[in-house]
Picture 1 (tube, helix red, strand yellow):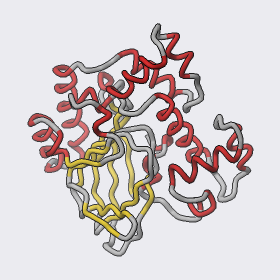
Picture 2 (picture 1 turned 180 degrees about the vertical axis):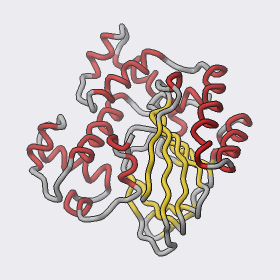
Picture 3 (picture 1 turned 120 degrees about the horizontal axis):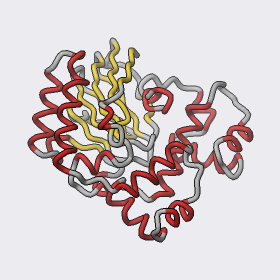
Picture 4 (picture 1 turned 90 degrees about the vertical axis):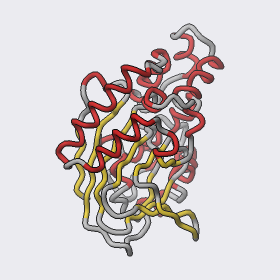
Length: 269
């Protein structure tokens, strides 16, 4: 998989983690790949062959321009041919800033952008899809800068808390973060649901597990050491999260290749 990540305009850093492009010579016989929750919503423009989402024995074709909110469960996808994708990887607060829809309405689901975005975003993303690959980051900057300047939906307290969670890989204390912001944990939870879509502890859990996957450099690592270094109570706690976020045991997950799913690990952006 040929992959490239590019930074957004500095004015967008609070809202956009990166732009990315992925291409590959694919086949409609390719196996399904597991994409693990990573704490970031995504807008993905597919210029290549359709991507197929697999759910048990069933499958369906994903929309050409896909919006994925915060997710807390694995998703299996496979290309139906050549891969040509352009992605906008958002920060936890980015989705609410771009779409005026409450973020909790977009959790654990993928949407056709044409069904949830306003006309300005729909038109801009269609333009991205028809542009030359080298022009897409510039066009994305222009589109998102214009939308953010007009929407102004950012909750700066939630942004600061989410940024602290990301920088610490989920190893922080929600009560302390709320107190530092001068609000109660319950107030912070309500504001998180609106801006991020999931509660603070749920985001922390996803970020902590994201760091686990990014830190693995062996097929059979020392799990007790990984658990301790990534902020888990013990090895069994880590194993439970492995099954929750990948849908399989560590041995089964690490025994498979994940060319598409690995694009969403933090060392890629």
